[in-house]
Image (tube, helix red, strand yellow):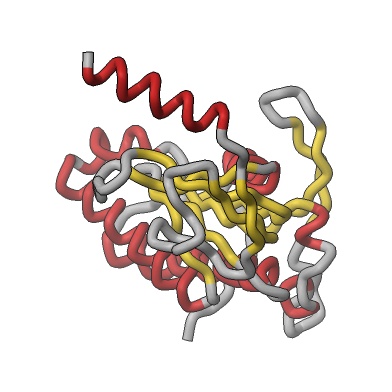
Length: 231
């Protein structure tokens, strides 16, 4: 009976209490003071970078459990270090996928450089050292998002953040469509700094394309298979 009461009381409190929304210009985490398990959230403009391994479900069959674990650990280590180096924050791991979040005026350019450096690191560090051949797809989009805290209070293993809006959803879809490449939304591409669009030799690093999402919607975007050398 206690569980039933707890469930009824909690859902009732969510349903009847007004929702308080405040602005933020930083990437929140689960310890951010402005986020609680009540009806309270933060809104901000963020760029989202999703990166995942293509055909990851067969890694353990191809390389064995231990070697597959080495690939996953190396992959995520590269992602975390590169995203943080480009002023981003990792806010979710999904097995073979990572979500990086960027804030500030240069968020789209930072997310793009991070994606290019990750591609370079996978091709030039991970694959040669582990003697494997994995490829990754990356997707980037940006926009206004509501961030809320979910899970169970006072339980560090059962709480997280939920990101509510279009940008994170579209970035995830774009990553699904990328085959050893990076796909960026048109609105994010349009505000990139020049060095993220054109190489030092004057070559265009992106090609425009239209992709069809699983929901049947056609989306205009840009694709690149360029890497960014890490020195």
